[in-house]
Image (cartoon, rainbow, N blue to C red; front, side, top):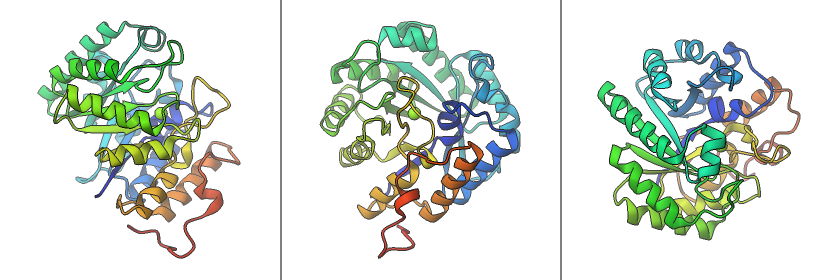
Length: 303
Ligand code: MG
């Protein structure tokens, strides 16, 4: 079974790194990801530049990315203003974020869960009307930095409400990297029961070394779309010293060696990770493959 890896380093990765790259470097990162085989890329976010200075040049990035029929660029939006900017910039997809818990929602989005569900519904309606794909990420689906445990039932109920706006896909995100594989199976089951037939994507963090195991558990539960970030860049905003997003090359290794082709060229992903590490002034990225290399008996790693 093939698995689609959504490359999130240009947005989720860079947004959570202290270094701010030039527009040219961001475009070069996206170009490299495309050359490595990425076909869906979370490229930019259209949020307030005073709150997220890393994404202030979103329009300039989108104006310069390589345009191909087989590559889809995702822009993150949280309100109507962001959607208008995303549509004007020519994104192929928009992604909105709704948080499972009240405290996290108010701290992170400055809005209650109900308000964000309504904002999502408006965004989805208008994005559909504009003819772009629209997905929603359920953040803190495996635990909250403020409220602790989040039950699978809570995630299922939120997903049920979100599906009223007919998302093309729902992403379940372990925003702070606290989930474990048994929980992944429970959450996926609860979501499938609450919203039968909805397309699922999963977003894991390797903050506590469970990211790859969680990703494989999700695949075994039938999830065929996973987010990842080259080199594992992106950190964790709630654990500043910790690693963050699952690394694309580490995930690719686990998937290819498990019989799940991704279309990615691991050598090019590893090269891209080394390159982005230099751009960010990082001598040691979270990804393990950059240090260990691919399996010796399978030098291509193609699958
Ligand atoms: Mg992330």
